[in-house]
Image (cartoon, rainbow, N blue to C red; front, side):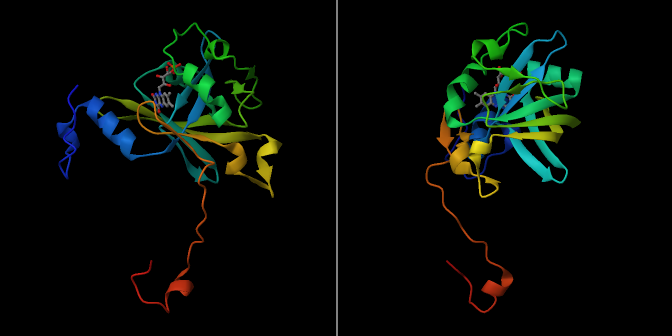
Length: 215
Ligand SMILES: Cc1cc2nc3c(=O)[nH]c(=O)nc-3n(C[C@H](O)[C@H](O)[C@H](O)COP(=O)(O)O)c2cc1C
């Protein structure tokens, strides 16, 4: 495998292979949240696979999205039903999440292999993962094809949130209770609940009578 020249201050993406770009980008954009995307195929097999090209993009309406690097079962199923469920991976689910990333043939369900329980969703055909503390039932809004080695960005509107009451404190989901896992590059992961800190965002009124630069 060729290594991108990390001595260089500037790296031209058009000069890098798809593989090198993958390792470069996934080591820079870190940690990434993991959308554990559950779907159902045309033959009725339940599928679930982690996607760390995942984020939220809008809150009213709530829109989340994931990107499939190439055409995989998750994307095929999503195109078929036009829906998916984005489940959150807490620390206690890291091991089954990892099993569910194996390249199982389409007729095999990751739910079975990873000892996960599929629960029928209320508003979509895709099942949710019973063990996940948060699950978001989503209807697809757009599927965008990106690039020369195509990825497929799937954007979905959240039609229903499922939230375990045990992770709610003072009316909000508490990340210290949710304990989501973050993805780094390769087989690296991060915990979110350790080392949490808070910053109060300043307003212009807080800053205007002081001299920059501020520390
Ligand atoms: C933590 C983690 C994050 C991943 N993120 C992505 C991703 O964002 N996009 C992608 O296409 N594959 C991603 N993968 C790989 C897929 O999960 C893997 O290819 C899986 O077999 C796809 O399953 P499917 O064929 O059932 O859709 C990730 C794997 C892991 C372990």
